Length: 179
Image (cartoon, rainbow, N blue to C red):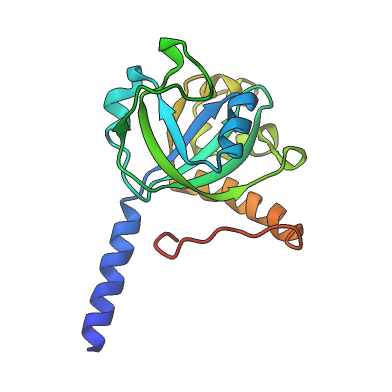
C-alpha cells in the first residue's frame, strides 16, 4: 500500500513536469472582456495553429497587457484546443476571430490598479536573457510565448503576494490538480 502511494505521487509529479507555461499578449480592452466573462474562453489566431496544437489541459497561461506593459492574471487551461469561428471579444473581423480556442479557469486575477509593472520584473526573467535590458518590450510583440516555468512562477508569486495582501476582499482560486 505504501509503495502504491509513492508511485502515484511520483507519476503525479512527472505529469506536472510536462506542463507548459504560456504567456499571451493582450490589449487592456480585450482583457477586460475576458475578465468580465470569467475567463471562459481564450482564442488564438490561425497563424499560431501549429504552436497552439501543443497546448494541453492543465497547462498554465499568463496574461501580459501590451498597452499597460503589465501582467494582470494567470489561469489554468481546462480543455484541449478546439475550433470555433464565432466572434470573440465582440469582433466580427475575420483576422480577429481567433478560432483556435481553449477554455480557462482563472487562478490569480489582479484589479487594474494592482497590475504588475513588467519593467520591474522583466530584467530578472530567463526568457529575456538574450535581450538588451532596455529592449525587453520587443520580446513581447507576438501574441503567444512559451515561458520557462521559473519565470512563470516568479510572476505568479508576485501576484499571489499582492492578492494575499488584499485577502480580505478576494480569494485565490486553487486547483488541486496543479501545483
